[in-house]
Image (cartoon, rainbow over all chains, first blue to last red; front, top):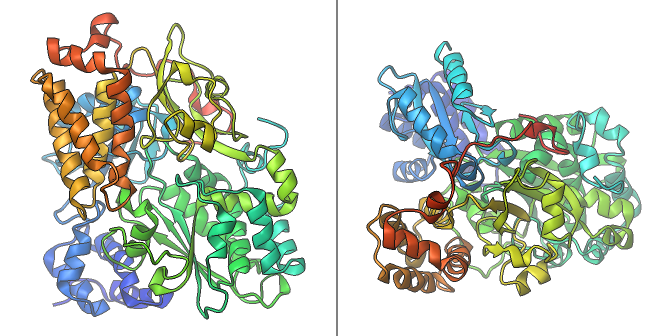
Length: 158
Length: 440
């Protein structure tokens, strides 16, 4: 049974037009499916496999390799705190402790109310903002405990 | 910023993401000139003579890379490596966000030179703003006839597709990027064949980094001699313990000390301790190297490398053991798992670092670290695993006493010497005010 809307199914079917090989459309297709459902449940992976005429095992293999494909439901907002070198040198660990205390979860988990998923991230290529984080699509930094609180409040309301 | 800046003048102020702003700054003139008056062979020769080298880390001469493309092949591709994920490298994102037309123009010049009619720009998932600006730039270029059919009124056709990564550092390795672009796990390929011969879909493929391609308009506009006489110019990402972290355009060969001064110098009252000159894959250098020119050969002689020209500055509040542990943790997290030395080596190194930092280290762990490092050296399938030994070995050589202090006392000697501002939050002014730093 298809879960994806017809529009999304059509969008996925058109993606291979941009590439010489159909499988190149797989990663873009998984993003379309994830945008629709919020994550990638097993039946959605199978549906993407059917739409692109690829083996289901190949689709699962790819989806499980990359960190921006969610194989379980994430929170409403994704908080990526960079803890790589430039941020670490500028107090990222302090910010991580603060985020853990505020959200009451360690990195890798989702708050009980489903609002935030917290992840430690590798370098996000914005070292002039260290220590920095990405919330959904937006960058913030240099972070202080105060600015973290304000940012979380803003997203909590969304 | 030097008056002869070739890239930053498109970046500073409002930037040139807007096509009209870019045209006003002279954008697309080099591509038009190349397509209407130069032969593809002469474009390759100009690039070859300019001394332009790959800015992603490997530093391979760009013109020579292009010359490997077989002339007669019916289908060829240009692939842009915009996966920029080398720790503390942020120049490509800045270019994509603030001057994306430089890349589009560079793609046109490259495609013309090698005879390609389709280009894929692979940009990492986290670069939301970078991708959005690049997509807008590509769309605007199509509208003006700079992309698509018969560009600049010539017989040249060129399509550009922006492709999104999905979160994997290894996708920045050029053959892993091709795997990812073909819809598979980003795992490096056996070489040879090199991508120039059999790359994307098995076709001859030029893969260049965003900054590399963004230099091409200046290379064509100035000509090889004038371009070379500017250093040649390079973008340095400066981060860590400096007052104005940011991207700076300076001649290749600028000494490390001068680069730090451009970035506002160290924080008040702090002393220089060490630095990575070329991202976390380059060996850590110490104060005795402050006057080494930031250039390929001098850094190699100093036992390190230019890499992606990303200077990570560490002052005297830095615990080197923690820094190297964090770098090792990065490679462990990002190892694709294909080859044993990288997958297992980074895992075991992390375990040893973990016990040293948690007061459970043993003195023989230092030999163990060196032993595992040796096991990674020259044995890995790609450069990811090979990136671990340089800084680890340098830290064991220059900062062995810090390891011994951790193991002997269960504490950190930097923390014991200094007030508890170790790894403290940055207390300096507005980093956004730094020349050439991208907006938040």
